Amino acid sequence: MPDQQVQRADSQASGAGLSIAVVGGGAAGFFGAIAAAAHSNHQVTLYEAGPEPLAKVRISGGGRCNVTHHCFDPGQLVQNYPRGGKALRGAFSRFQPKDTVAWFAQRGVKLKTEADGRMFPVTDDSATIIDCLTGAARQAGVRIKTRSPIISASRSGSGFQLQIKSPDADSVNCDRLLLTTGSSPAGHRIARALGHTVESSVPSLFTFNIADKQLHQLSGVAVNPVALQLRAEGIKPLTQTGPLLITHWGLSGPAVLKLSAWGARLLHSQRYRATVVVNWLPDFSQEQVRADLQQVKAANTKRAIATFSPFAPLSKRLWQYLLSRIEIDPTFTWANLSKKQLSRLVEELNQGSFTVVGKGAFKDEFVTCGGVRLKEVNFKTMESRLCPGLYLSGEILDIDGITGGFNFQSAWTTGWLAGQALAQSR
Image (cartoon, rainbow, N blue to C red; front, side, top):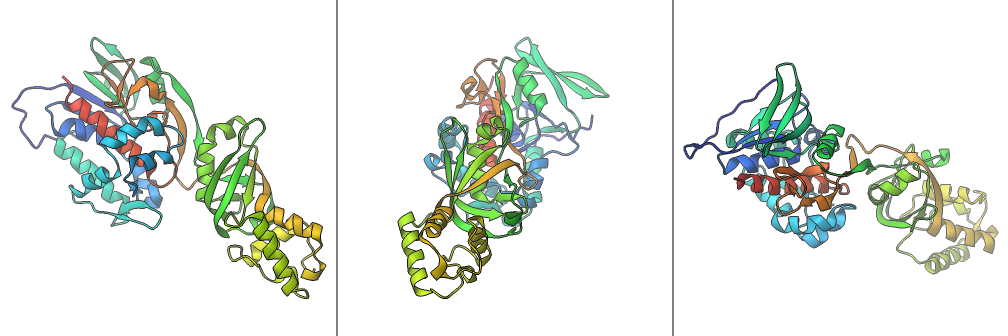
């Protein structure tokens, strides 16, 4: 079992502390391990199943690492979590994005804020974050064991016994256990074995597949903003507003990703079959759209309808596509446009209906909803309410945020809270 053994920078003359095992070498695992080891004499060992820790950190943000989001009001911050916002409200009052920024700054890593609020290292390189975390773990004295998947855990006295899938080690004992295994089935099995209920994992943050070849030909066209409404039988409609991107398989962009996050369980239950209604001009009422079209018609009687888009947010290509959806001949002049056709055009602009036939991926990142039920965890310490000595943080919990650095922030916060509590544990 590879062992990146490091020594504490400070003395442990005060005597031996507790043995703490952190299972999962991601953002929450490292933050928890560092916080637990940095200001205590506990022996902290982090177990990572893969050959390298922090794999998700490396690929996030296209390799730049979207560390957090520039939202420093906990009340506003929690609104970006389809699941877990209520539980995180108090947690964010103790450790939130400004604390994340300060934590990295104290270790020589400066973050920058982009126009949409996402925060990245100024180097635009996720390796900067990885080096910072591994360096901080080294300085704190955390032992990092890679290629060490924990396949089970059970109570052993007041502590735990962990079974490791490794050729040279069968089991280890620890006094405290922090699970930070994300959506890993192995982590969920361990949580269940220790008494927890795990909500089933389903995908979140994905794009919509639309079976429309004409739409696909508009791949790359963006509109900002649009208003979307997701409809399915027997379910209250869900709405989102924001930028939309047309792709070669359907619809994407921040508005779609947000809608997929809030509708994750709904869409899963419907086997990703639903209807999405697009208001291409959310800044205009139907009455305004109708009046503008009538004004354009009166001023351009001899001009072909398809030659230009009368609404700035809509490109000429998109305008022509929308005309084709309601079967308006592209050679028609505005004088030829009947009242009935004008009404259909208004409806298409404000309530265009598309059938969702499946889901696509979102870049290289994969976010799920589901995990350990939040009411079973004390969010002041992240300790299990059912199994004393067990702590949980990160995506193993039934928490997920929208894109923009929010999932990492919940990992930093819950990892830090767990680590602080573990550091004070006796």
